[in-house]
Image 1 (spheres, rainbow, N blue to C red):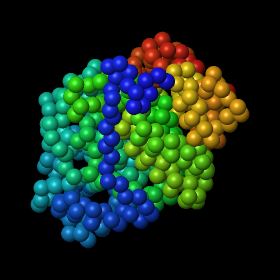
Image 2: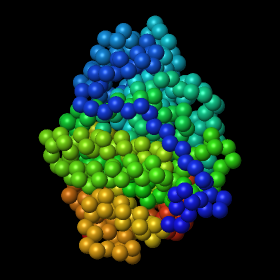
Image 3: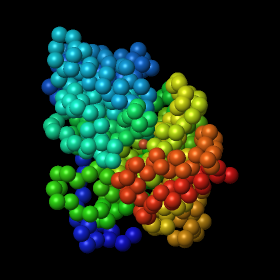
Length: 439
Ligand SMILES: [Fe+2]
């Protein structure tokens, strides 16, 4: 890869910016919620969660801890899995007028990515309302309106090991009118603190550990193989540097460790719920991968996942209590990933080989020309061992869907530009075709 770190291309960016929240990690640390919320001056908290977690032990632990610290709590749980604009608007209304006898001065989110993403976006729309919901989304679908001020203090408590949302400034929301997901991103959306208690993953069904685990794996490998920050154009106003800024020394550091964790513990964590070591490691890996991709951006696997969840038909995934059509985010990402890396490796073969080595792939003296096959083969092997779908055909797609899938995903413009190869619509169609079935 030319123009690598600390040696910018002509007109390329000469610097990169890192943002992560304060992070606390450990079994039982949800009990710290009250003290941590109080340290941010919270006295009246809106607790965001989903309908499945609302009456469960994690929310109970957090509520008790908040109350013990003298903090009033009201629970908002009307959040759809794969959060949508309606969930965000309900959450924003709750923050504005769903209160008890106090005015909310903080938010605590307890849940997976959908819950944390909804909490971030609901605060934005409650505090800084706009005429059109899409105003904060980037072109071509939105107006790219900048966010004008800080949100409330936010304590983010993930209950799955994949999203990394507790460590990112990103919120992914399904836009009902367009029937697909888009990203809102701004430094103001970063949580104040992440409270990561791997106890939450002890009872997760295996399909959820698999889907979220492949999400974390893909976050890590995408940021490690992304275009280098030095290859993105220099920007005039450094405060407007996009979060998709390309691979950099920080994202490499966190992504490499996350890949090592995924390579060693993903299969174990999926196939044995009693393997606490594996599940704890995956929880840590998910947060590391969040700290990485939240400061580099992802590329084609995430961009192309949006076409899959846009056009999915009568399908659900076992272990997910969600009505059809539903494909979990991690599965929508990983299903095309082997074909994507077989294509993308040509743009940065060394980086792909390094990523494969971190995953403990079978290298067998592989050279640069083998990089795509090494990564693709390693992913397929992991997918087989965790009973993932064998390509898009297993998700109900056929060759007839390829053009529509590509047209839908092509709207994720900046993520596609973060790919280490110049990629056009025809390339995306070719990749989807190659991802229909693997073996
Ligand atoms: Fe993701």
